[in-house]
Length: 380
Image (tube, one colour):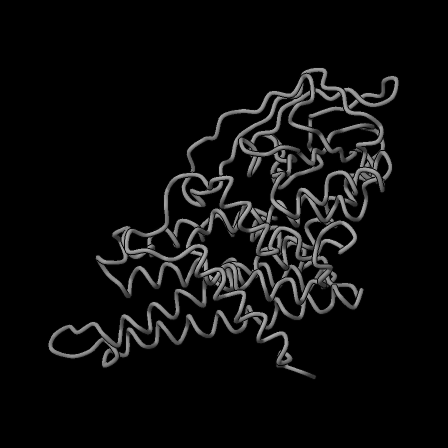
């Protein structure tokens, strides 16, 4: 078993981390609360982050899951705007990768290059008010018409939605078809009958705008169907395979950054005439942070490796996602405790990291859903 990166991979990681830190420097004011700007998005495109795993013939880098995750880890570690990082990864793994795998060749060549450069922003439209974890409960419908489909319904939580140029949308096409009841569509923002909602306030990931969509007799041509009608469930699970591994590598980078901040802080901070490193309650908390991070790292790398080897990776992916989401949330809370009142203030970005970590136990399948997947894979 090999547990190290090649010299080339290590150099690329370090160069990427340096480029990210230069492009999106951490400031004394903490991460910005405003939504990302188009120039931020284009900069991510220039750095290659919006097309890491997209085939080269469509403008991407053509990397496998493991190498993609390694660079996403560098992005999460170096960029203090976790909302921007999340938005970029949702764009790539929940939208671009399904297009690369299932769209028609004409649609791929027309849409993917601009998605890789950052000229286009994509949003994943699946969540509804009554269909979060239960994606089988979708109520948005699509009915056949001449040359395409008519969509009606509402989506409630679309990350990147208010800024997006296109949406990967899932709709019910045959309620009686069981696991083949839904179909995936690419819907352009300019489509007649589509209304894009305003961004709503949320707890964390402040730089990434999120909002709802309304489809009212919205026409989508046959050429914008992904795969075949009824394959929506398969396509969604495919996107989750990318998202639950590679997207969460960004939080592995965040966990590393929090650990570095804690180590620097406890070496400098003194209380009762002694450095914080003299207090076992503090140092053991940091030991637990390191343990969580390294355990999650191995699980994530293994899940990505199994994906690249085209081996069954459902169990490894669920374990990885669960360990990383619960681990980074616990470590972010520990960081606030270690920094004390300073961690509660916004200047160091500690409290923002905690708020950004909370949704990891919710999106891409809640922690309870991951536990259910693990149990199913174990046959119980």
